[in-house]
Image 1: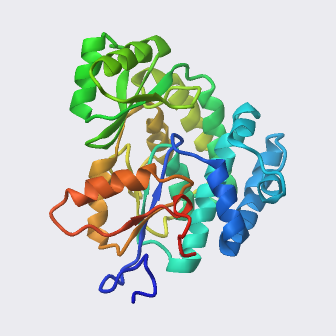
Image 2 (image 1 turned 135 degrees about the vertical axis):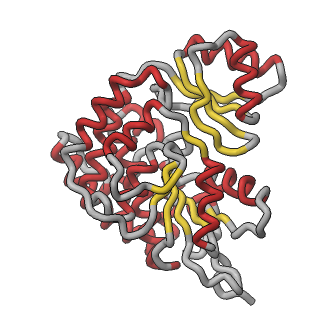
Image 3 (image 1 turned 45 degrees about the horizontal axis):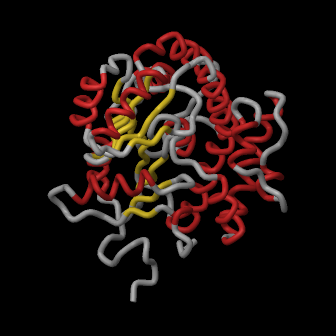
Amino acid sequence: MNANPARPPGRPERPVHLFPGQGDFSVSSLVTGVRASGRLRTAVQEVFEEVDAAAAERGLDPLGPRLLGPRPPTGRDLALAAPGVSQLVQFGASMAVHRALCRTYGAPAAAVGVSFGEIAALTAAGVFTVGDGARAAHDLALVLTSCPGGLTALACSERAAHDLLDRAGSGDAVVAVVNDEESVVIAGPVPALVRAEKAAAETGVAAVRLRLPFSSHHPGLGAAAGSFAAALRAYPRSDARFPVHSAVAGRRYRPGDDLAARLADCLIRPAALPAVLRQTAAYRPGVLFEAGTGGALAAGARRVLAAGPAPAPPVRAPLAEPDFPW
């Protein structure tokens, strides 16, 4: 019997950690995981001590004691909270899951960051401190309040999504995220999304508006991207302890990159998961872990990697798996 189900026999290599964006976040999954795993609870306590120090600078109440207390916040509570609170919780959750995974399965060989998740991925690699990563997450949240519009998930390929937008006359909407051959996200003004959603219903394509009150990955958000890049330039950075791959850049971050500009690209350029997921094969990982609270990124990764020429490693979503072995 394999004593470690997350690392199959014959695959002793280090894992790869996947850091999701904001579209699949569940505070209830985090709370459930914390109550089930002492190791995760310890990681949440440690991470949020640093996150809360940054939150206090921004005039926000501590989050760690609420998450670990008897009456943790709900998703609705976070949605109604001050701008940035939800993003700080998501950032801290990703960092805590990453830290707990490292203590159980070892440090990753590499990381993949998706949009907002690129901040956490770079922080996990030591480029930013946890405090500065939290500040950057809050900076982005404030910038997003000036990004009108929305995001809609479509159960179709990128090509089909472009065709649907053309048929709907939704020229102001764009394909923002390509998860795999069966799932994309479009972004744009709400009227354009409504037209696209109606066209999707008429053609049998499932469409779900994401519960995010902003647009992103849209070329019309150049001013917001400039503001975010300016905020990021205030934070020092260190060399990465392991490679970080960007779904927006489509490649690994390089030492000479203008990091602020590349992170700000997440506001104006699309993210494409398949290419960067395939790049992880170079590390020969024994397993890929989703360092977040959901399982959508892991599900997409399974589909992408299963279509490759080589046998795919397992992909796990710890907080979406009740029996995950911490």
